[in-house]
Amino acid sequence: MNVVKMNNVEIQKKISFTDFLSKYGLIVGFIILFVVMAFLSPVFLTKVNLINILRQVAVNGIISVGMTFAIISAGIDLSVGAVLAFSGLIMVMTQGQGAVVALLAALLSGVLWGFVNGMFITKGKVQPFVVTMASMTLVQGVTLMVSGGHPITLKNPTLLRLGSDYLGPIPILVVVFAIVIILGWVLLSKTSFGRYTYAIGTSESASKLAGIKIDRIKILIYTLCGAMAALAGVILTSRLSSASPIAGAGYELDAIAAVAIGGASLAGGEGKMVGTLFGVLIVGVITNGLVLLDVNVYIQQIIKGIIILVAVLIGNRK
Image (cartoon, rainbow, N blue to C red; front, side, top):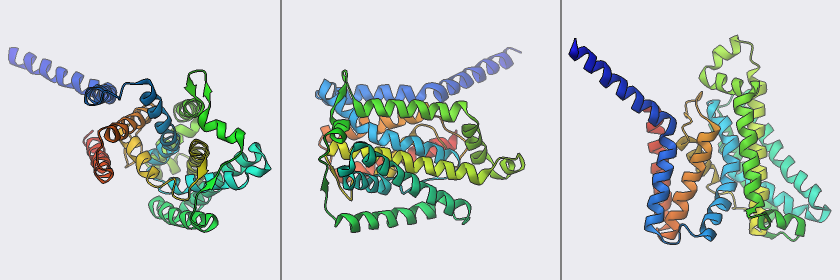
């Protein structure tokens, strides 16, 4: 009898520890990473560097909000980096028409690309990976052709302020990211659209039997991805004061890494916006720390790849 009681206690302890890691492991990991980076580099905790980290994660964070919906629905969007660059180019090309027109044109371009992706995925019955990979190549080609392969300078003072001005002590682009992540959390956690996204990722056939309009939800998801990529393009272009045709290179991988690290399953049906937020912060801190430690840029890519792989393996174990 005593042995049985001891075994029960041990099992309960293991369950409690597993629950703790499941709920708070990401936060604990972020704190440990933060402390380690602060120990390795005396520059890390300076005000200038911390603000720089927030600026850097804002762009990836906005993209990651849309990517969270795509991955939870058992999909993926590889075109977000290319759409980012294209939307930034559109904003610069239309800046002479005024800030409002340029912003709307840039955002609309991202929405249209996302809508087209969604249409091919749903009506064409093609896998999201294939559609968005083809879209990535197509958008990159169009951006390079239109720009002539050269950066174009942003001169509109109103648009420039988006990436340089502050709202109190906080950069405007960080405020934009905060608003987007909150709206993304509400949309995912508090609306039928979010519930349907989870349902489709868990079982598309069961969702269809339940009467969920799968095609409509998927089109909305990829349209959202395009819109978030466009908004990120606006922010990045404003911050850099120019639109580069290769500005979005690698952002799709950073977004996927952030969402995967945040606990979303690439098989679909699992993930949280809070997890994505911490995933974005972890990727940002790692990237910033590697730069401060003067780690070779190629090795940085290797490390990011390993992080994605480990995150996926942990997700599968869970």
